[in-house]
Image 1 (spheres, rainbow, N blue to C red):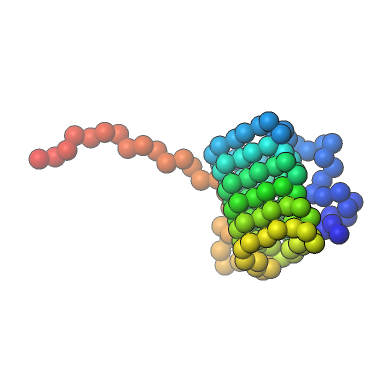
Image 2: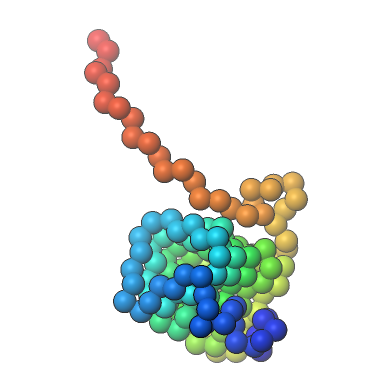
Length: 145
């Protein structure tokens, strides 16, 4: 059972905005404004994405914040979605899920907590987490005597 009307997952895989192929590897925070299809590996967080689809060969070690998420591969991290999260049969998720709608298909592995609440209106930062500015290194200053 798919949470998406076409029954094919988050979006038509022939037309995503960004694709990480099986051999692709990314480390760090990825800010995506459109749809992502991940068949490779990401060590880091995905923020501000519209739709995130983790394919069967996709592996993410980090948190995901998006509008909609469909997991067919492996995620080790928390997933926050404004709309829905789907964990498909054969997928593996180790982390917390938070969305108004959550679907765990039979045969999916899930270890974590679920919260089916919409993001808090009192805390707009929770509604759509944004990428943080990288920390700037402090200039070396001589020690005072």
